[in-house]
Image 1 (tube, rainbow, N blue to C red):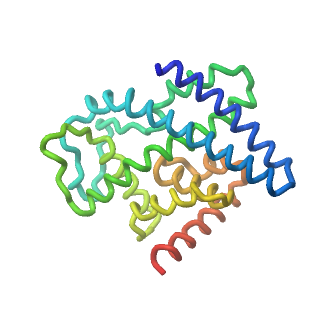
Image 2 (tube, one colour):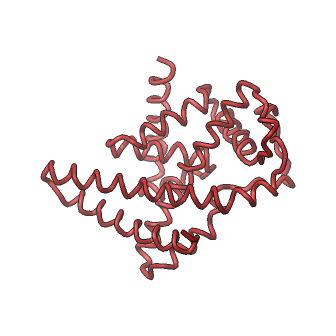
Length: 239
């Protein structure tokens, strides 16, 4: 399918996702809620596939030219990146595609909700590649000689490490991303929110006021959830 077709399909799915989420909130019967929840999960999985496909097929070639070579996986986490390296945020790179998606529906409330969902999908997709880069950096594994790999993931991995250091978090970031993926796939809506918060904070680099707005929560609540997420992560990963 073309990029335009994917944008149209994604806009349709976002509309269905919004309707399913609303239906769940209005349904009290357990059986109906479980059926709707399964439908919602299937919709979200298809949305992720479309966002990931755009990244693989459209953005990867651009990134490979922008960040040629073997990357910077051996660079220390405390290394300061120069501003002229032009490190792109993933959410900025996919903005053109997201504009296409949002142009399909002329509804300001839908556009606002879809922007939140698209940011969440973006941070989820890129987390998988960053996790691999983080593990490679930790083990100091060289990149395959027979592959020309861009260093975009490695650049973002450094930024993730720096954000963890800035908040004095000693948990392995790659392990954290594993747990966040489990939270995202769970049926627990609160865990899903915590996963979204942590990804936005440490993968996308969003501020807490921005995250609170996306979570439709107050800023104090977002900070409380952040503390709660860290406690749960430490309990899971450090015993």
